[in-house]
Image 1 (cartoon, rainbow, N blue to C red):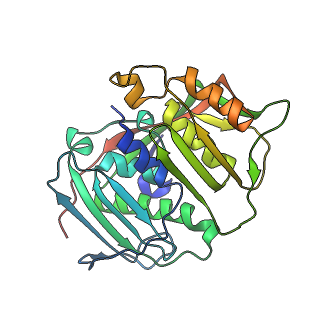
Image 2 (image 1 turned 135 degrees about the vertical axis):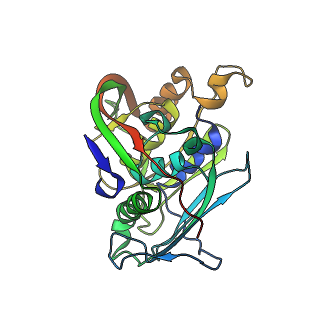
Length: 270
């Protein structure tokens, strides 16, 4: 099935950007927009600017705030697609070479979401519409069974703390192999684990609400190895999740979406 975006080699820096999109920043967007106005619809940004930049090797960043705006810097089209569709790099293929090499700065403004609960879904929808209109992007979506993981609760129960503060929601990386979470639900945890394990993780914990927890692990691979830098060996991450969080990751065949870029054009500078 081929869909326009409006209808629907990983490194640690890119992983951080991808996962950071899940937990929205409350920081204010700054800068002056010199941009094309967008149609006045809830599913589209009011105004958006996309500018190519020459900053090879610069760290990508992404911010989204409650007012309905986004600011992305040093991002490629493929990284923008991953953010818009909430997918991992290995779920996306195809497209001309520039989609994974040329970098852009994207600044877009509201209108603000109706509620905090719909912020992430609405921002994703707006990004999809923006990519369709400005990059003339078309994707082919295929779903198939692939090797992944199922996340469940250990027989003795989980070891996380229920979050009492409804306003706090963040997951911070405080070390190379250490994270602290406040007010994080199981879907976000499953997404985090999937990014690092490079596989789909399905949440079957049955746990509702949000939780606080601390997780650290020590990869057994040498620091200079590709596996240590770009993928967390499951023989260190899986036991850490079980022992510290009281959760279990089991390998299974799970439904996985695959996206192929069928059409993409460079946007005109605005």
